[in-house]
Length: 587
Image (tube, rainbow, N blue to C red; front, side, top):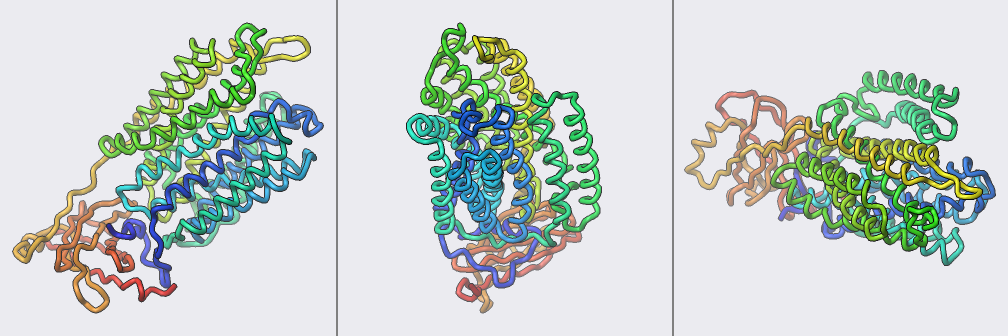
């Protein structure tokens, strides 16, 4: 098996002085998945004590919600920015930076009871959200193609796995220790994740061209804050208040100007032309709907479980038991990752996405009539976890298959942003529904069963809308059929090949037998794959005239990529690929 995948070099040549991968990739997947779980733990850290935050911080309930909102906003803003920085300066480097900022934010929160300082610390924690698209980008660059699908599925679903596991864990800590211990635990997980990343994850040699678009980053940040702030606080401020409407209007203006500027830059923060491709645009819209579905269950079930039985519908469970009942949501997401890989390999990620969305709809539909016992919430969690796991696992594969490898970090960052927008919308809308349908029980008001059912119906409608959008995604297409020269008798056939032929050689001109040769089209997708014969000869058909990249790799040699052009006709273009030995590459 080759030590590197040649498709990682699509769109760019080898980097001068690039450091070869001297370590195996065996630990990359679990370490990056652990980083994703760490991020999810940070996100759900305070869910068990949301109702207690006003007293703990000595503030009003309205102000206390900023502790949650700050993380949401910071994560949404930082995700595409960290993705682009990873494409430019190294994904592993930016992954470590994201985790380091999260650790600092956790420690800030751990040593304070002041609301303002706590909000600042939680905003720093939100920067860890960039770890998800960065981890997916590293996987694409480092892993063999046959392992990539299941690995990306595990990384993408880790956000749900971590969230599901964090709820009972955080509830247990909050019940038996000082609540600041939660932040010390998050800092410890962040440090451990950084150490494992340094030890097991190699830096990618794939780099995008251009410079970082600072004005684009500022414009996107301002536009997202103006958009998401009224979304998350609209139910508190009033949806028709001057503040809410003014911020929505400002978001339209700022994002409009930002888009106009991005379209005129050679190296924008977000390639809007790529984002406007049907497969990318529809995938991101579906991601918004999946985000709505994922966050809805996290908001509804814990509250239903913890409401007292005196309400007539509350299940009267403790904080820890409520967390355990919802934990199967994350665990099921993890277990369906291998199932996704099998479905996607046979039918493509579009089919697995649509199956996942359909399962989510069934789960929410069942929830409308199954909320009278704790065991029923466990069943709902498992069904929804299976559907969300399939859907989440499919999204990065659809994005990766539609963009150039040098844009993987930024594209997946934008996709993660779409999910964040979905969770923000879900939090705002469902929070508003539960507040407006609440019923009084003495001095306080609690969510009503009617409010829970309306929330489930909203989530079901969002999922069905996402399923309709997914229907219009392009279907999976198999890679172009390749040809392999087995002997000199095939030379005549190779000359008539419509594509490329040649030899894979080492630095001394000797043939490199059994080398992998990949043809990558201008969109960064694999257009052909073959293995050279014992004399280093290969032949690959080109689907059409145009520019391509031929990439070669073999054990013991540094991978090499070469831009080529096929003008059409029945004569194959002769291209020899020369692979330098690993020892010759400077470290």
